[in-house]
Length: 200
Image (tube, rainbow, N blue to C red):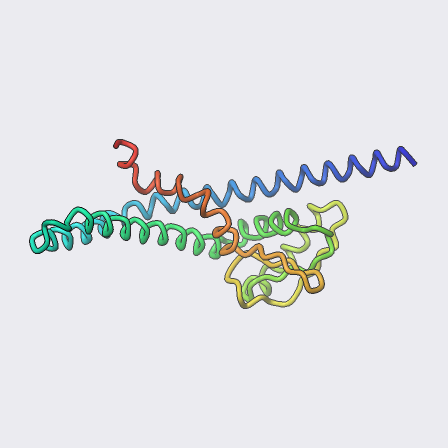
């Protein structure tokens, strides 16, 4: 009996390590996509900031005593807008990945998030019909005892997936994953978008 328990324990540990590695890989890929689109957003932020500066110059002429405070507010608003656009572009890019990239990414995501290996995989309506079977097959291949099935379409998500078992849903939509990672990614994305801040 001891041998079976050791073997079971080792299999569980290896599965846990593999799951963590796959999840780390998926996070790294999402961060790389964010970094690529943050660089693109950095070019667009100059136009937004220029408009903000012009409005501030006119405001300074009328209310010189409050110009500094207003400048800070406008700059912060412009930065927040640029940050939001960067995250929205990252989400749009993830949702528009070509099949060759989307299928393995979704499969790794499903396998990493699966708790029992028997959940139903819910994809957006467009992805369910085109990628669903392949995603489930690849995810099952990644799991030691993969018995994931393709569930109904999830119209509430535009990309990513939901794992469902009974009344329990695990939301792995790209929008949710980006929201969860945003607090950690705000700093690095801001550093890419606003490198001049590091010089102060």
